[in-house]
Image (cartoon, rainbow, N blue to C red; front, side, top):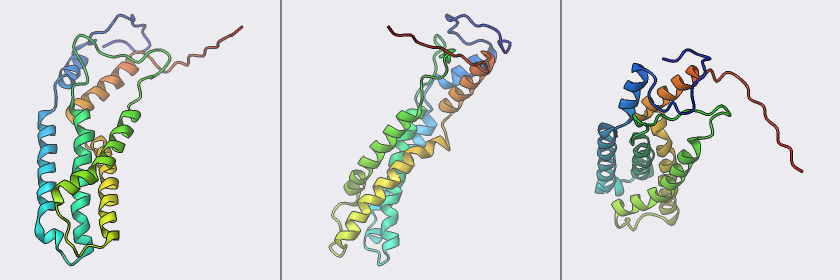
Amino acid sequence: MVVPGARVAPGDIFPRGSQEAALCAQASHPDWFYLAGLVALDAGAFWYTSINTIKNSPSAIVRYTGPVAVGLSWGATLGGAWLAMPKCSSHWVGDVPREGDVRETWPVALSLALLAGATAPMMNGIFVGGEPGQWSTEERAGHVIAAGVAGAAGALLPYLLPPRTWSAAQELRRLRVEADGQGRVVVGYVLRF
């Protein structure tokens, strides 16, 4: 491990010790168990939504559980699949530059949440099939809105329950920032003529 505050060469792109090497090895392969769990969650939600007793229930609350379940599971799959993919390579370990972190993850998370919110109602419609005739127009619209909102929320859920690849990459990033002594402040200016 590098001593905090020590200068590190810009070309130092390999893991800097056994702890970083172990974290990078963990983050360099897809988390197949997490992905399989997401697929199983999707299958369960789609099966639950397609049950006729749910679609034909006299209670509107029970009928709304289907779109919410599909939205949450579909959103978790879209958001979690990206987090479960490899985030490190033993030949290139990313480093935060002196100017600060320029690679934010929130734009990707927001984009996946919007994608999940837009596609979850379609996934719900595919698995619900023909909607019962006794549903009102307001309830049909409510199913679309419920699935969309649940899909957007479900895409952010994997950040609360992250896969091993994402956890290891975040821990590796934390170690790199601490080792590089990023507590300093860099001030710059630009003159234009």
